[in-house]
Amino acid sequence: MKPECKLCEANKTLSQLMGRENLESLLYSLLNPGYAQLKDRMNRPKFNLRSLLERFLDENNLDDFVFKQGLYMKQYPRVICSWAYDENFRRAKERAWRELLEKLEKGEIKPSDIPLQQLIEYFHEELLAALEEEGYVKRERVSRSFSHFMHVLLFTARGEELIAEKVLEEAFKDMRAASIGPHESDETGIGITPSSVLMDYDEYKHTFDMLDIPETMINAAIKHPEDLDLTEDVLKARVPLHKSRASNVILIDKSGSMSMGCRIVGAVEAALGLRRLLEAEYKDDRLWVVAYDHNLYPLEPGEVANIWPYGWTDIGQALDYARQLLSREEGSKNIFLITDGQPTTTSHPGQTPLQSALRASNMLREEGIKLNIIMLDNRSPSLRSLCEKMAELAGDANIAFVDNPLNLKSFIIKNYKEIKR
Image (cartoon, rainbow, N blue to C red; front, top):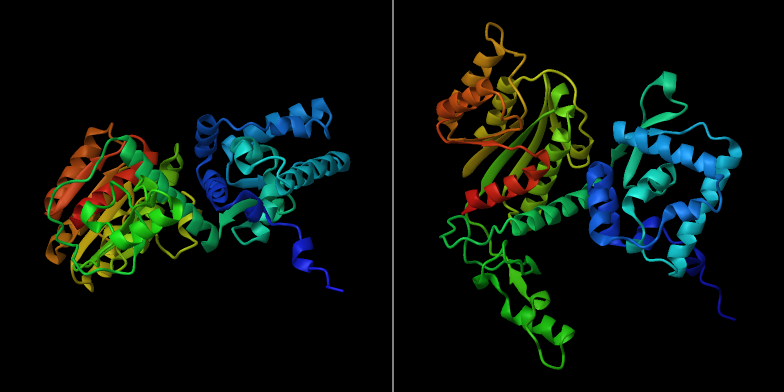
């Protein structure tokens, strides 16, 4: 008799039930809570999770829970608070979660039918426990005095990788929506040597001479065997090798003022998107991501999405560190300085914070480093004056004032592709 397959009996994981695309959207929504609402508005999911919870929870308790949970998450989206439910309430919520997973496994509902915002708000703890079990997130205690009920959500390198993929996808969507198309120009950084990098053709990222005809025809034969129709979904591009190498540093201001609005989220998205772009298309280029306040924080993969705003702003020290990193490199060198205000402290004795920032900008000229200043506050004339003076001293520099921090990812990726041309 054939033995039973134990693997077939095992319950599917959350990522298996959701699928990669929905999992990316879910993780991205944990970083950028506004995305869940936008996604739901676009997709109009059919399944209402409240109706599922109503089968297990008393209506008064449910209304109280939904109100408190929604209010708390708006104020502290990355803090996990285990509410003081009575045991019956907790068990009822767990039963509702198990039924949701069963419906997904049986195919009674599709992942796209579930509202992302409701999923995160109604089943926050259950969701994070499942994601933590698979290694996408982890929970860290905030303090000993509150360790029995309060933790902070942190992303792992595995979770951050999926978020970066989603960020890059959303950046190109935004760029296409803004009618930013390909430009006719000689790209000095791109060679004609074919590489092993093969990807779906994208009208913004690629030119027609990058089309790989054999791979495109094979793909057409698989998808349209009867007529070999060359539709957009069958086009394949082979990205050529890049001859000129670029070295880059993103400096992310993580001082206390960056907690306002979605400034830190926008800066994190920009760093993750640019890193993913380099991994996909510019493999010879280098990127360092460094957060700074009155100290410096070089960030490895798995640390970028976990930046918490705190401290003072030392722009001079940050620029000095970036210059030291790039001084050993060849080819083009770029610094992307993301900040939202004036320097407020300095590590250089005898210099004011402003003097330190100007001195550090001037020293970039000697190294041939291009300074890209990205300011998240465009209302102050003194800030504009500071940026202009820093750019003048640096020599090769750009200044951009970005109103919406969530546009940073598209701005930096577009800017980088222009640099490579």
